[in-house]
Length: 69
Image 1: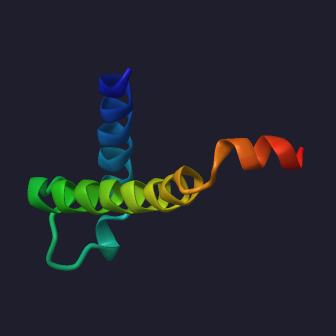
Image 2: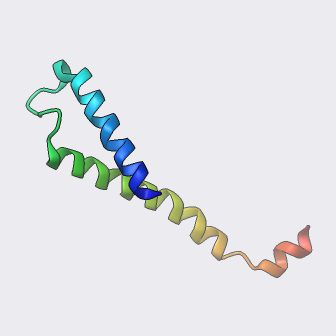
């Protein structure tokens, strides 16, 4: 399933890169390094965005939460 998302993202990046070619100054539309850096940046943002609420939820006592319900 992840492979399908990766392929869809690469296809979208290729299509958008061709469309926005005039705005890409100093970067080729299919620059592998740029695509990898952006993918790594997005992965880091997703990791932090999911890690913060997960750590907060892990600190809550389940029994105390059930008693409050």
